[in-house]
Image (cartoon, rainbow, N blue to C red):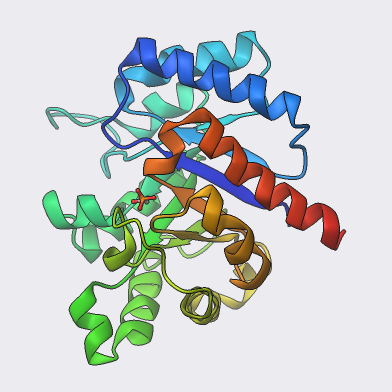
Length: 254
Ligand code: PGA
């Protein structure tokens, strides 16, 4: 399986800044010949049209994903964006159930499952985010919590393409990623929770304060197939360095 490094820009970069960032990233990836890694950026909605246009025009080796989509196909859902609208733009992948959306926008397990089903129905790949908070880990319930999150997310649409990112909430945006051992243990939990037929084909990513400094160790020994990167994806040099670390690891193991 090819590794994936995906940059979740969250609510950063207007469309002018977004075009600049993706162009810079394209130049750097070409210069470093990063060809063993699938690279993806996930800009804010209002940037998507500009970013997909630049990627197509300049033939950049970068896929474009969205950070969210509605669970509904169309209708009176003010402020929402449908999977069909994203598909029309050439978007390949949609984040489903990021912890920030679960926490701030009432995205419970049922909504996560419905959204994942909508993404699959529209022919795009869901990038499902799972991960426990600090209290759950302190209680020692993190493995069962994440297992339940994976299983309930797939309840409405069990079969199809999928990417899963293990993102412990206590590591996101803190500057300190989970340890390599924690990542390896939880990547195994995620794989084990997947339907048997999907275990081999589903990339399992780690996310939470990944930087160029931590990427090499995490990719070599964390048992994951890549990363979902937040803060460090906003800087083209830093994000490219993470992609290079993954590329080098796979180049050596090939
Ligand atoms: P971070 O965010 O890399 O800034 O911790 C990761 C994420 O929330 O996807």
